[in-house]
Figure 1 (cartoon, rainbow, N blue to C red):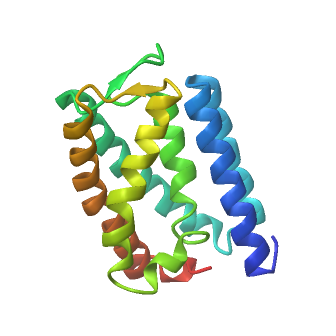
Figure 2 (figure 1 turned 30 degrees about the vertical axis):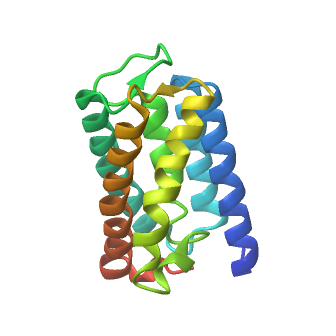
Length: 174
């Protein structure tokens, strides 16, 4: 485990960026497995409490996967990866898992002010999906409607995840 919080946050940020890009650029089972491998690397190198952080990652991954599944089912997004889809494409589950590592680390600064998640999430969340659409992983069939729905979803999910981390997993603070 790395002791420097700056180094931990930098490694966390880089692991997330690598995981997101791989999953979006090459959506499929293999990149989902790689994303979970990056989560394992995170838990070994970055996490101060791997068992508790793994619980938090799993919880957030399930919540995010449910939200994305709703977006696929309602037509906000469409999968173009060709990967097998039960509820949400498996590569997107990998993205959620690697994203969840950031909440207690490289994105922990968002918890410093109560309003930060409510301002940044409705912009950053949809931007990530729009970027994924530009790389061909998903489509946003009706762009304005899709972006508004994604913004509303991220307005709810990200502050909720931040609250859950702070309230139920305070020991994960970076």
